[in-house]
Structures are given as structure tokens and as C-alpha cells.
Length: 116
Image 1: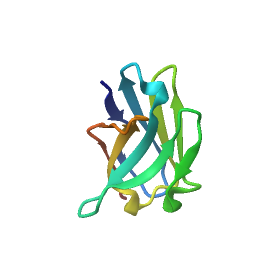
Image 2: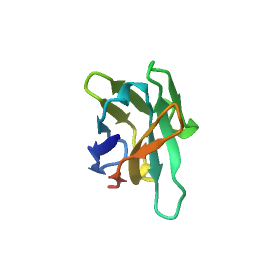
Image 3: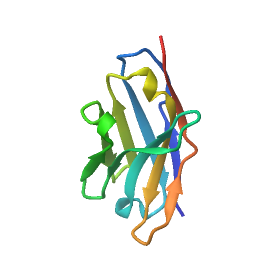
Image 4: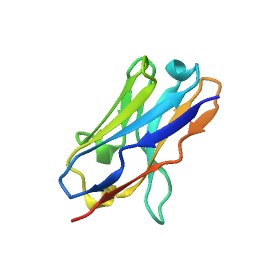
């Protein structure tokens, strides 16, 4: 069983930065493909970025160059560094883990609000 707990959300001004963290429990973290998703009010949940256990990363086009996903397998942590934030980045951000056999794990989310 894997549990994911996000932290680091909050209110930030446009152009600012924020770093989200995701703490994982369970023994299979190192083999999970980890990802950050987000869901804005009235919108569907969308992929922000993903990272494999080997460190290969993938980003949604609108996040490339602004967001950086990373992981620390020893600490069972995943991070999302967000720079140059825009009001349209306002959303609940979710940490997700996908096992090789297809099981998905989700955190409860952390709210990021970009506003002046």
C-alpha cells in the first residue's frame, strides 16, 4: 500500500515561485512512476509533469521551462519546483504514483493560488 501526502501549497503572487513536496510511504516507491497533476475549478484534471524511477522526466507543454519535477528515492519524496507562476496555474495539485502493474495511487492534493 502506498500513501501520498502533498505539502507546500499556498498563495503566491504572479511571477513568484513555490515548491511542492510529496511524501510517500510504502516499500514500492522506488519502482513507481511519479507525477504531479492539477485540477482548476471547472476543469478536468491534467498532467503537469512525470518522472520515472530512473529520473526520466516529461512535462506538459505549458509547464516546460517553468516547472521542474524531481524525486529522492532514498527519502521517498517527489518535488515540483514552480517558477514564473501565472494566475492560470491556480489549481489543486495532486501527487500521483503509478505501479508497473497499473495500480494508481493519489494524494489528497494541495491548493496553489496565484493572485496579486
